[in-house]
Image (tube, rainbow, N blue to C red):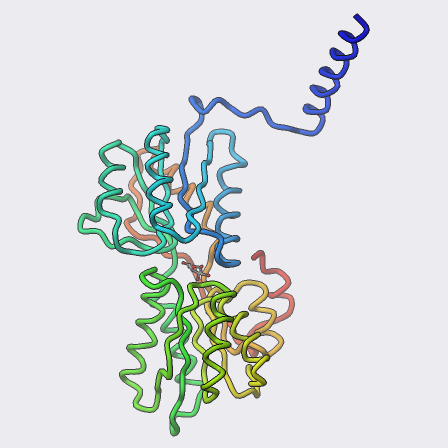
Length: 325
Ligand code: GYE
């Protein structure tokens, strides 16, 4: 009997603790609107910020149940996650595609299951655009053009300019468009030369590795065009170890994409010359598009988020401190 009472006491204490610690009662998913989100991975600070923005937009709202799957940068993992969402009967699917190609079949499967889809961040290249409702994310070509403009204005035009190009995941919209902007510009500037294109897969570790190997035999670089901040951090470490100076007054001018807080700080401190912004905080916009759709309102076919570019000259410490990601 004594044992029975102590078990009872323990149980009631656990229940009390649960209610005091604010553990939320989860709504049965039959009542909630279920959103399945297939995220690319966690390869960069940008991605981590984007995941957080998406999660907070939905998880703070009891009306929604948010299921997220991390594809670890593999398209095959996205297919597996999406097929699971279909089997589970989610109400809506959001996809941040790893690469542009290869989506026709899976998007047709989603349509056959009558589930609406939004593509976020990067794009998909499919024959039938009606397979998804809308695509929200950055204008990656415009970002590349901002970088090119900076090279035009801030490097000498009377001597050869050797550009080292660090590329992100090949086939991802962010890579395709940022590369296109640079390659197009090189064709029209006779003194610009891409000395090499190195594959960094948007990660710091890979960029550090390829840069370290490259710098063992090649040190003649004027500009580093790096397709995201984390690759830039890896490259900076490799340059330092090779004894090559960079940033304001250094040998290598650095251009980076994303403009996360850490990169902006380096830019403010003169270590990075140009940060082209790529805004990951569009979770609330994705949610409001879904809400519009649920209310039967029309939604635009393509939504671009607002972005700009920062240099040491136009960035303040207050701005860096206020950066949320
Ligand atoms: O620039 C990079 C991330 O697609 C915008 O992917 C995204 C890119 C971003 O890994 O940091």
